[in-house]
Image (cartoon, rainbow, N blue to C red):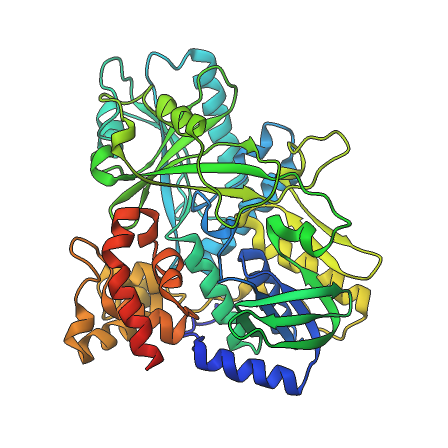
Length: 517
């Protein structure tokens, strides 16, 4: 089948559209599907449903990607870790979804990333053999998923010199080269959610942030605009709860056991120009690793942990002292000059929405998603992982359509490019800097046009930062940003470093004020 062209632009999500769509919903409150939650799963559900021809409304009480979906490792992985416990089907599903993202859905946001395990004296023969066997299994997963080797090369052993080129700060004494494999990396997880929401809106979905869903049932909910306090009742043929780690607040019949994953943020200089995912075995553990990942804005993310997080769910989880020490101690086993707390520029933590199992363990559920239907008819989707959001959305919509007997077309998202998607020659021809193309894809020239029309928008939002004032305007006019927090913490990731956030806050507030005026 011939490949469809990538779209050149997505729809405008902004404050004006939000007001219009809230008013329209008040006038016509009968819809096919209500989606609760604006993370990657909820946005994926809205896109899947809208492209099947369903009148779809997504509500999010905060901002797009406000919860777990912005706190990931930014990896699109092929499921290798799941083979160790015999989860072949789930591993294959993950590899398939990785290929779909890389090749079709979001080639502008997902890129191949080399993964390096340095072979140092502390890594024994048995560990090396286990890692090599795992990488070979990953090659088999890639082949089984149909992802070409030209996109994700096969794993191999690399020389000492090549290992140091990929990870310059690795300890040189005793270094015997490294083992290399390839995986996928997101430019940014929150930007993927925004692209999903914009694409859903282009297909007719109503996307409403700062709107809470109350008195939720299988046939609708009361929606409250948190900016005005006004309410309206929506009657829906089906309702899908995609509230992530807060899903049990929407449907009390399910019980979650959250798990926290923590990352630290460093300047790229601390890792000497890292160009691969530095993969470090955790001493004393079998098949467990931490990763140092090159990231935008001249940063490196170091993660991650996997700790039970019982108790109330905060809006913004924070790393704990023991987790910070664990990450530093582990990465320092392979570095020439140990990193210290003084090198840390920021940190973040996310909570995984895992179902509590009969055995009170999250180990199995964390490897798969679940779609549950309550007696009221409310459909809930939980568990899973960012890489497989599309399949999670498909399964949830399938369940809602079957339960409510909705007339809907087949799932179309497997071959559907997201807003901004561009690749190959078309990407090479874009009249925009590479930095903007990596963030906005085919929309990058539109950001350049904004900057060209107003010299003030062509300047960085703060000294030393690589975000232009035009990017703030674009996010407010096109990507649904409503306040300075949306700009700093989700449309860009300036906020991951508190000092950078403070430096750019005035520019963000000025952009919001200008757009409101």
